[in-house]
Image (cartoon, rainbow, N blue to C red; front, side):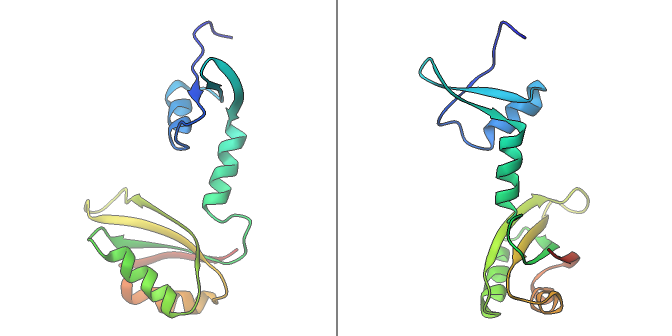
Length: 135
């Protein structure tokens, strides 16, 4: 237990709570509305958000690709998927660990498109397909 409890408010952005938890090396945060306890955010809650953001409960094809950080790249990728007649059910980006600073890694999940077709659709608009997996 600690005397100086770290808390968040009910309007704290979802990405702020895990940042605080990692920075402070804690597994939960009391949530306050004014000075009243209204909830607790735990690591399990954040895992649920993570699963939701990555479409973890939906079937589909998950693909990760190296893409340019240039303006308009995401528009080209989403246009290619849209032209294939399917939807993107989850999408995430992060800066590539290696390579130039204009290189990003994109991960998405699409439904109702076979793995081979996903690769065919994306290959012309990404730098490199890193992996493709049916989920």
